[in-house]
Length: 168
Image (cartoon, rainbow, N blue to C red):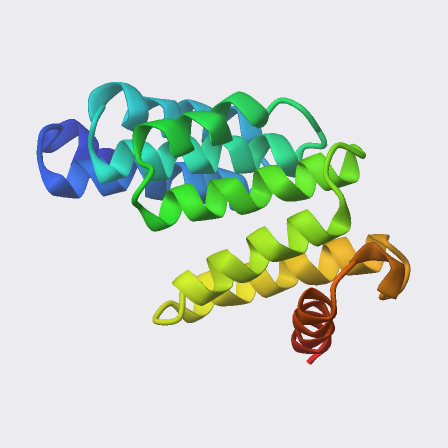
């Protein structure tokens, strides 16, 4: 990938190569280098899908390294810069989980956002799986499915379905 970015720095291949370099560093737990590669993609390709993807990856590296609040500006930037993309939905979902874990969003809010993202990702199995995993995280942290979290029967039924989907 380094050869691609060195030889063809302005090509579409280079745009994705920066992200692949970051992912490779991440697999080796070299998070600072991963962030640097993702930041290269952002800096070199602003306004493209690759830059948005790279911002999401930067935020993810902060989450993985337990820098709990560090990803917030990155996730917010993804939502702001590319609101109609699947990346924005994923950023919104991750923000909701962080807000829930920080006590700033009730479990129902995080679960509803998770379901919205899962429904929007119907054609993308990996994104749908991530959304359902986030729902399961919220419900697991909440220790159990608690009917007192919701006030109306329709929402309660939806929440129960989500809980069952997340556990499946």
